[in-house]
Length: 184
Image (cartoon, rainbow, N blue to C red):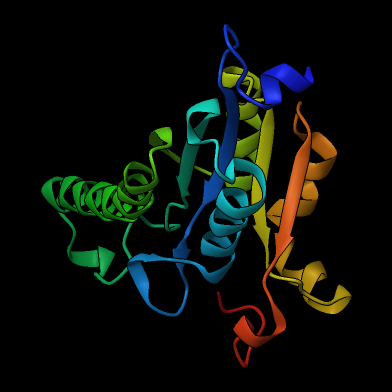
């Protein structure tokens, strides 16, 4: 990428930055995770700076389906309509999450797009990177220790190894770390 393109020079296309965002495990929808908010704010402060017209942010939220398709219902009593209602509710929640990022982009004058996929976040993010071909992928990182990473796995590590574009991972700050680092 040329310096002129990074600076949003005349005749250049906007630099497209994809951000993988997720909901808070503590507060749930529509609250963004600490890591997602940190990655977004870092991108605004360190990359966009005072040149919002030179960039376009691409927000991807990947919803992880529950094994039986229900978060808080007993699937023994499920009907086909129940499945549709849960899918509709989850999509609405994801849209509310993305709405917060889109509103903030419009406040600062940065062009953006946002969409939802369903599946394994690390695989879906890499699949979307391949499809959309952003200039850069920015993902938050919870900063889990080696023991926790074995059991939880990390989306950011997977993306660094497999995404077909440069990847920046943003660790949450020490003062933002919840009592249990797995929470976000």
